[in-house]
Each structure stands twice: as C-alpha cells, then as structure tokens.
Figure 1 (spheres, protein in one colour):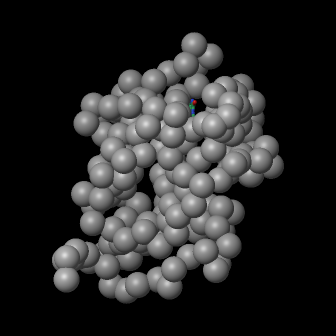
Figure 2: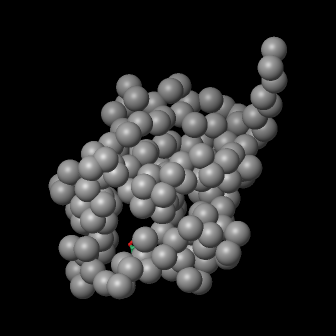
Amino acid sequence: MAIEQLLILIKPDGVKKSLTGNILTKLSEARMVIIGAKAVKVSKELAEQHYYHLKDKPFFGELVDYIQGKVYGEPWDRVLAFVYQGEDAIARMRKIAGATNPEEADPISIRGAYGRITTKGVYENVVHCSSDPKEAEREIKLWFKPEEIVNKIYPTKEVTVTNK
Ligand code: UDP
C-alpha cells in the first residue's frame, strides 16, 4: 500500500466546541505522523479555492462563510490545519472522519459524533479530510508552504512512541 499525505482541517465549529483534543486523539488511532501543523485565519480567497469544486452549489456562499468561521466570529474564526502522512492514509483517515453528511455518518466517527446540519442546510461536520491523492496534493500546496512541512519520513507503517 502507498504512503500518502493528506490535509486535515479542524473547522471553526470544531475549534469553538473545544474538540481539538478529541479529534486529534481519534485521528491518532491511525498511527500516522503529523508533518505540518498551524492555525489559519481563512481568507475568502483561500476558502473559495479550497471549495472550488462546489462553486455552483446553492450553499457555496454559506460554505465559504462557515470555513472562515464568520458565523462564530472572534476568537473562533480560524481553522487548525494539519498534514498527516502514513500508509493508505487517505482512506483510513476518511473512515475515522466519517461521511460528509453528519446525520448519515457512523456515530462513532468524528463527523457522526460531533457534526450537525444548520438551519440553512450546511453540514457543519467539524473536520475536513482530503478525499483522494490528487486533491490531497492540491490542498497541501494551497494551505502549506514547502518549508512548513517537516521532511517526509518513509516508511511510516508503524510509529512507535517511547518515553526514552
Ligand atoms: N457540504 C454541505 N452540504 C452538502 C455537501 C457538502 O454543507 O450537500 C459541505 C460540508 O461541510 C462538506 C463540504 O461542504 O464537508 C465539502 O463537501 P465535499 O462534497 O467536498 O465533502 P467532504 O470531502 O468534505 O466530505
């Protein structure tokens, strides 16, 4: 199986609900390595580029506001961005994240446990998780400068943590 990188975002609703610790704990079950991490105040341009594939959807404007955290305002108007790396990382992280619609997501997935649908019909699903290798590459380049990524480590089949 291939070693992959992907972008994970803890969206503003995840930040506001203090879910960062819970989300990172759930993701850590996949035993991947984090090779990039930062907090980002999302510009309209970045939001529109990130969700370019949904630009014709009726909810696009609300989606852009959502990822910018506009509905929450200070100090929740930010996302936490991560690049993870590991074997078969995209499929495995998508499974932990859960289905796009939080009401259809497995209840023990992140989105199933913590997501909701707003009165305007937007899926506030607390995390973004790249969906395939091509999208992951595009998204990592969009969100991170090359120097913000720690040297990629191969292989990362198992990450052993010791206290020594
Ligand atoms: N979204 C929504 N309603 C929809 C489809 C998508 O509100 O009918 C939102 C939701 O927050 C989702 C994001 O738009 O995470 C991006 O949608 P995509 O289809 O790319 O799904 P994802 O890759 O995030 O699972």
